[in-house]
Image (cartoon, rainbow, N blue to C red; front, side, top):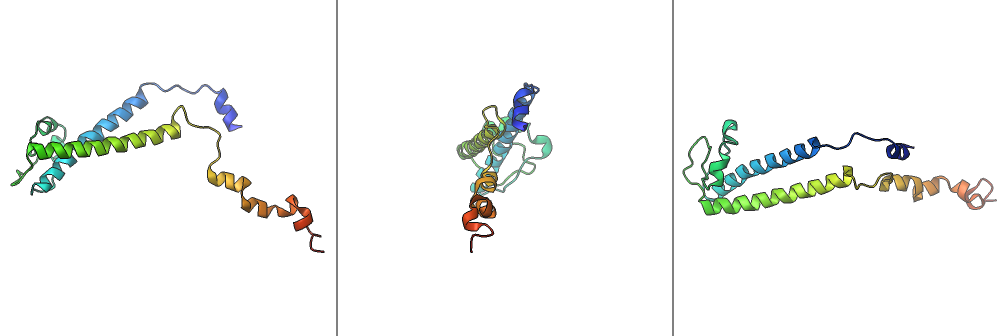
Length: 153
């Protein structure tokens, strides 16, 4: 019944708000990954694992992308990564984040996207309805000659 009702109703169509929110979230995660990459690069160069203050989180991105590994950090580091090391860790971290975001997007589209399969039972539901446990529970109805009340006499 629910599947038929879903086919007959005309739900509110997806507009630009949901894709815009997804894109904004992905950009936020990628911006934060830049700071993680800088922190990892500084640790490998002998510095400390530190992040900028909240006020400098986005304002330091320009300097960070230009190769400055100390941009926006509250305390100057004694040892910090050079621009080559910084770019290496930025590329590695951003590729990892893009892979993760792609997997999440793929999962989300399979779960809620327009191409999802509607009306299919989960494996546990199929086992509950068609599996061996139901056959054993209803054995007397299915094979009364073998499992019925007078089968052993």
